[in-house]
Length: 148
Image 1 (cartoon, rainbow, N blue to C red):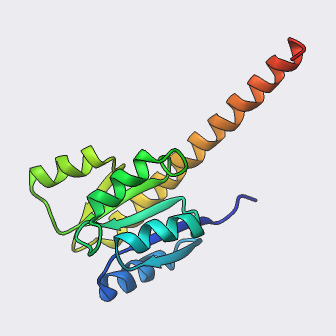
Image 2 (image 1 turned 90 degrees about the horizontal axis):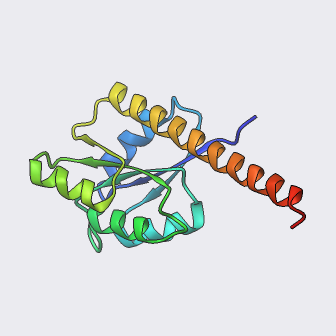
């Protein structure tokens, strides 16, 4: 049986965090909370999430900066990131994409939309992880055949 997915909710607004947690309560996952950009980076290291629901407008480091830092680090670059934002201008979307987000959803968040995106992103991560595991296995078998 696969391990429960780990989802980090990063938002400086308590009501938003509670709403996202309530939406995710119907999903079989472990959640953790981060209250600002620096806290998000710290929680990524301690919680090792599969997916981050990342608010854009946060103190200390905004979501764009957090996303760019995670993408620049080989240890965190493959974490799925879903930006949750009240921003909806084309420039904001471009900035999110340039920072490395995998997807984004606008506030106010629709529960059905959020859960479908979360489900899709976690399935995508599982497929990518399985492909990497199989690649390592194939490489190992090839190296054994070659006597390495």
